[in-house]
Length: 435
Image (cartoon, rainbow, N blue to C red; front, side):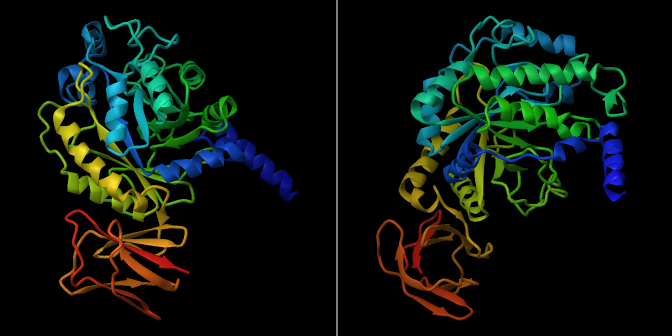
C-alpha cells in the first residue's frame, strides 16, 4: 500500500511539471565525468567571456532590457556587427598568460542572439552579420590546440523568441502566450550542435532559470541529452539554488561559497559537487564603455586565493569590445596576475580547500601532505594562529625561496611566527609539510 501510495504521489508530482521533479529521479555520473570533475577542480582559474552584439552599444549585456529597446529594433545591431579584430590565437594566449586553464564563453545570451553557426535560427553571427564567420569554432580549435578547456555559457532565458514569450504568465508549467514545447526543442537542438560540432567542449554553463521559477524547464530531458551526447561533459546551472539532480558542478555568482553579499546565494547551500565562483574584472559582464571600476591585480589574486581556500574555482569575466579586441586595462592587469600565478601556482593548481576555515589572516589550500598557508592580511602581532590543524607539521618554509619558517604546534593548533618573514604584497605563502 505504501509503495502504491508513493507511486501515485510521484505520478501527480510529475504531471504538474513543477520545476522538474522528474529531474530528481536518478543520475549517476560516469567514470569519465568524475575524471572531468577532478580535472576541473585542479584547474582552479578560468576566463569568463561575455561577448555579443550588445557590445556595439557599449552598455553591458542587459542593454536591450534595461533601455527597453524593442526586439525588432535591437535585432538590427546584427547587421553591422563585424568583429574583424577577433583573433582566437590572441584570446587563448591572453588566457594562458594570465594563468587560466579554461574558458567559458557565451554561446547565446538573454537577447537570443547566437554567437555560433547554428542551423536552428537565422539570428546568429554567421547568417545575420556581415562577419559571416564562426568565432566559437575558431576558439574551440585553438583551445584544443593549446590545451585550454572550453565551456559554453547558454541562456535559458530569451527576451525575443515568440515561443519563449517573455513576460507571459505561467500556467501548468508553461507560458500561456508561447509554445513551450517548441522552445524546449529549440534549446535541445542548439545544445546538440554545441556538443557534437565543436571540439573539446567539457562544460555547459546554464543561466536564466531564475526568470521563471514556476516553469517546467524539462531538465530531465536537457541534462539527460547532454550526458547522452557526451557523458564526460559537466553541467552547471546558475539558478542560485542547491544543486539539482543531473548537475556536475555548483556555481556562485559574484560571491565566494558561503557568502551572500549580493543576495543571489540566499538559497544556495554548498553541496558536494565541485564549486566555482564567478566575478567581473570591472562592474560589468558585457562590454561597457563607461565602466572604469577596474579591479587591481591584488584584488584578483586575493579572489583567486580565497576561492581556492574555499575549495572553489575562480572564473573571472571580461567583456571584449565589439571589434573583437580585449581592452588593454584587462590585458595589462591580467599579465601581472599571470606572473604571480606562474611563481606561486604550486599553492593554487591541483589543490583543495583545507579543513581549516578561512581566518582573519587568510586561507589555506592542501595538496597531498602539503598545506599552503596564504597570508593575505598580515596581523599586528608577530604570528598567525592556525586552529584545528590535526596533522603533525614537520617542516615550514617560504614558498619559492625555501627559507625556513619558525613554528610551534600545540594541541589547539599551530603558531607560525611572522617576525622576519619576507612579506609578499599580494600573498605571503608558507608551505607546511605534515604527516
